[in-house]
Length: 300
Image 1 (tube, rainbow, N blue to C red):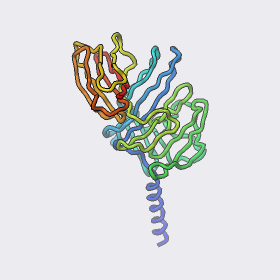
Image 2: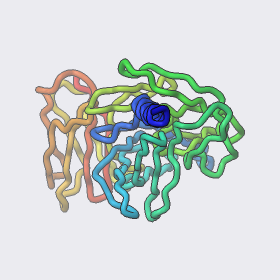
Image 3: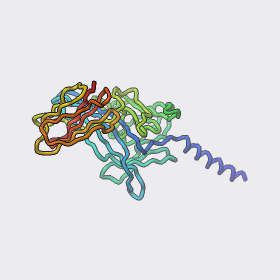
Image 4: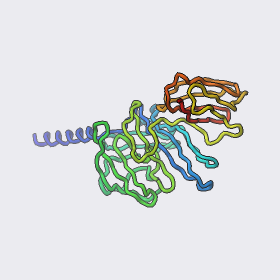
């Protein structure tokens, strides 16, 4: 009888432990991030705006994983150059009993630890996000209130490679970017926010960006750069220097990333009527034969 009771207590304790752990959301979730880079050759700075998001499942080594993608754009003043690599970024699997998240990077079948939420104070951080940098130590463990639930938070100690430190948070990920290496000397990434079912569930107070979906852009367009005017406007905008040989698609999004207007044209100049739009900021994206242009427009 005592043995049965003892085994029951062990099982019960494991169930309670699993219940107290808060896993990462893997449905309709977006991890919005920024990357601030220093172009040493040109002596200037660039900022990349992007997000990670799940999109479908995949079977690797007979185990089911969630595919993670990246999309976004950049803001680089001439003559800076920084390229954002969008697309598939890896496959993620969670083990709620072990309180771990695993990652398989593209072109690999080898599983690595992405997050280990079972670690203790003073442990060396167990994560592929450390990269080839010197080891980091967990210097504090506490909890943070998110949507009426307390999420366990692990503070990552500072070192020569990562003088800013950072946090791993249950159900959120890293405050330096969901899949971004912990590195913040001269350049580095930061988690701006996390959206779940289009609702912001976490905002990083160390970020200076707004929690809006980032749209694609390119670093430069060769010759005859597309112009958009007037900006600000209260009714219509003119888009000039378009190709007259290929269809070029024009799209307008709101700050939540929702597509509001889209049309194609083969004219060198086209006019869009946005008089019905509410006052505020929008993103206009033009897909051209030379790349993608993305700019902000203001409706007054």
